[in-house]
Image 1 (cartoon, chains in turn blue, cyan):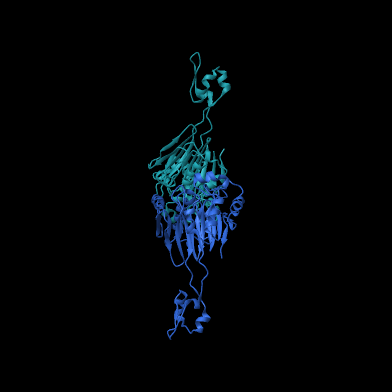
Image 2 (cartoon, rainbow over the protein chains, first blue to last red):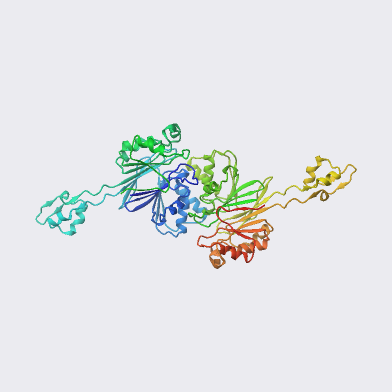
Length: 302
Length: 302
């Protein structure tokens, strides 16, 4: 599982700070999460092949999270994309993109599917052989979802020497890996637990931005491998955070602590701050396994 | 008159090439022409103060000419702009911008005026004490205008020693500078031509992008100080140029030659080319006073 931060700053793009966008590679699926202005340039800078992106998830319709989407969709056409592209985001995203394509007289060269969201409850919005994706309803000034990405459980690990000892034919291996018991020719049942070991735990990544402090999301996040949580402000600006429905570093850490996640990454920093180490320090007092996002930074979770 | 090229490449923004946008400073008025994705970052990079921009001209609704507009409009609000902003562009631009602001629940902090264009004839769209701006209808795949920016004529240059010789009172100087004759106390008329000299010629700048070869625009461009004309292709790709309604370097030079402009700047290069000197060479064979646009380049026309 590998996370590339393309942009992790709040509000307007600046010369050296990009608005929110990140690429998650999970179980051989590559997804784009949010798409602020300039994302396509950051994809190129980070040498991520456009053709590997098949799913784009948009948290909410504030400009710093989606103004780069229409350009990326257009560029896919200019690059003669033929593969399907799926966009998941709040109701309105389809109207916004199609209106612009209409005036450009530039329809896409590929099938473009919009999956518009408006539920206030968690929903499974994608499930394939590699991953599942669920929404995490957040609390912001406009309708906003976080996203929970999970690897599909791997097959159970077959203990080949044990299977051979029982003379189990290879044709049954697939079923055993999926959890079935083995039945020998004499009718004896060999329980699956004897023949297999647990697979490595399925990894998960939760993206939560933008949101006010929102403990309602904790049950969904419990034990997830990595949580990216916005921390626009430090606790000293808790009032501004509350008024704008953003979180402080301490609040993000509190969520991570209660959800017992493996690791917390902070991002969506306000550019009013010069020293982001303060965010790490503030969060670490509550939840020590904390990292800071940074444009161009790659987190590799083996 | 000063022109700053923020971006001069066709199609998708890339790591080191920006889509169309430029800033023109003319007679103390600063205007933004086109606004591809990433323009606000290029404005910062070129240290152009956002607050100095009051008029934005959009040639047409292809993404590489306007996808950066909504972000810039939003950033003006985040920077607490209060001054009016005027946007001139094809019909549709207002709907596109307002739809996005609606979903963001983010109205502007300042009065935002749209001047939508749909005429196929040249129109005067702005006139103030400093400049006039006229549309130049172009021939592209979607409705497109170039823009002709002209300094308002300066006052005539008063020959003070001559005025004093005739004992003309200072109170009449203003009228004489505006072109009036002087009438002495004995009724003698002193013609304005005796009292004044011509002012420096009003400078003008024509922006023509995107367009197929379009000789119909020549009368409007005649004798203009500087012509920026798109040259997406070299003549060897004239067929692609015609099919996509773009121009070649030679065609741009032909327009410059026939319009007898002072200087030609080529831009909107296709990124299929590596060596843009070829564009200059091809154009110079027809019109020698030719320059190449380049991202970040400043042309200072004294």
